[in-house]
Length: 300
Ligand SMILES: [Zn+2]
Image 1 (cartoon, rainbow, N blue to C red):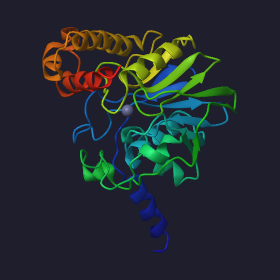
Image 2: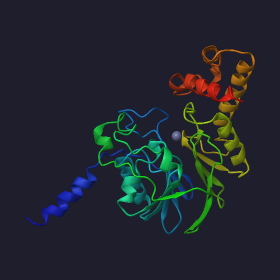
Image 3: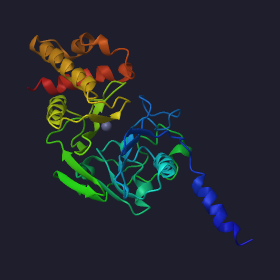
Image 4: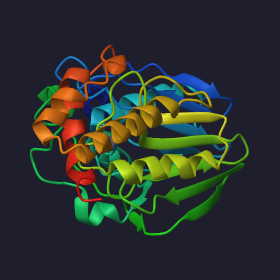
């Protein structure tokens, strides 16, 4: 009966919650998992974020590890079925926990995790995490909030396999205090993290509308032909436009309201931007975004 022990252990490890994630090939070297454009809840269990794998021929580089151990495990298993390559590096775009709570899955395999030094100041490793309070215990099981093993405070270029990866840190607070983007010059592919949203309203709370617009202006210089955001399905060269238009439109309307001496409450009631009403999460996020913009812009 001794042979049964390893077998049972294997079955237990495989018994982690299965997200049944569907990989989507974006370019010959990039495959992504697209989450639902929604808040994290017990239906999507945190599968509401985008994560990607870059095939460098010798290994995978993972862009964002996702919202839990089980999510990271599901994505990893799906990629191994496509091509069995080891993961060499995980890169975290920013500190919001839906993007990096899968780090523990990779860290236990000894994989290096790289993020900005904002993780020292603004990544919450408290328990329960925000994700933990919104998804089912089964989906969250085995998740250990794990900061990057290397935290950088300036731009960096990496050569891994046949790919060059340019890591750019945004100079000012934008969607978060320090957003990182990853650019593959060979294929002009840009991973923006949450500087780009599609199919849902962006979240500005905790960010800075001016810094965010400046960041998107800066990213235009890269002339990326494939742009992959942190949420939403669009990945063509115009994928940043919805976020850019939403933010610039909001800024001009809120600035005008402030110039006219309109109060914050009246501005929130006035700046409804109806063309975005059909987007997911409009009801949850739009009013808060206007309010956050007002509080930033009134000090200009
Ligand atoms: Zn975010």
